[in-house]
Image (cartoon, rainbow over all chains, first blue to last red; front, side, top):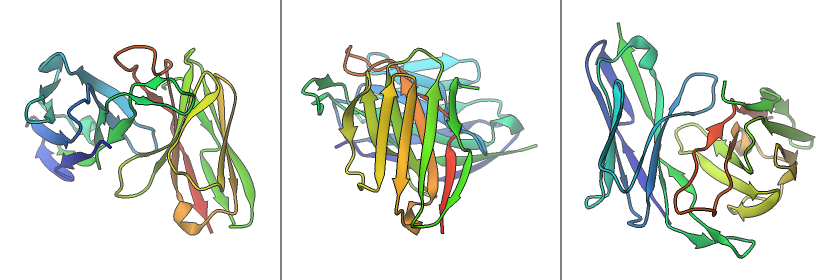
Length: 121
Length: 117
C-alpha cells in the first residue's frame, strides 16, 4: 500500500518568513495530493491540492509543487501570518483497486504524520 | 464551516458502555468516511461508504460498527471499547469514489473527541 512520510514534524517561523513542508510517497500510481490545515478543535480543511498531470499550483500565498519522478511534493507558504499557525497534513491517493462491492475504487487517501507550524508575531 | 456536522463533540464512556457517534453532511455528497486521529499518528481510515454501501473496512475491530442509512447520515456504534480507542473520530464526505479517474475532495467534520475510561 501507499506510504507517506512528512517532514518536519514541527516548524517555527517568524511572521513574514516562508514555510516549506515536504512529503514523500511510495506508490508511483498515486495521482492526487491534497494538503489539509487543522486548527485546534476543528477537523482538517482542504487548503490546496495538486493532480499528477501538473507540476505546480498556486493559490495566493500558498503553493504546492510535485515531482513525480522523485515521488515527493511540497507545500510552500509565503509571507506567513500568525493565523497560519496550525497542523498541516499532506496526503496521497494510491492507485485503483477492486473494492468490496466488486467495483473499481480509485484508491484511498493516505495521510502524512502532520507538521505543527507556529508563526511567531 | 464545512457542511459536515458531528455529534457529540465530546464523549466520555466506560469500557462496558454502548454509545453512537453521528455524522451528517449537507453537501449532496454520496460517499462518507470514518477516520481515527490519534496523537502523533497519521489519520487512519476506518470505513468508506459509497451510495450507502460499505466499500472499505480497513481491518477495524468489531467493537466499532458503522451504519449508513442514507447518503447524508453516517453513524459509528461503539461497544466495549478499550482505553487505546481514545482518539478524535473524524467523519468526511465527498462525491462518490470510483466514478472517474480522479478523486473528489474530501470535506471533514469537526470530529468527536472520545475518551474511554
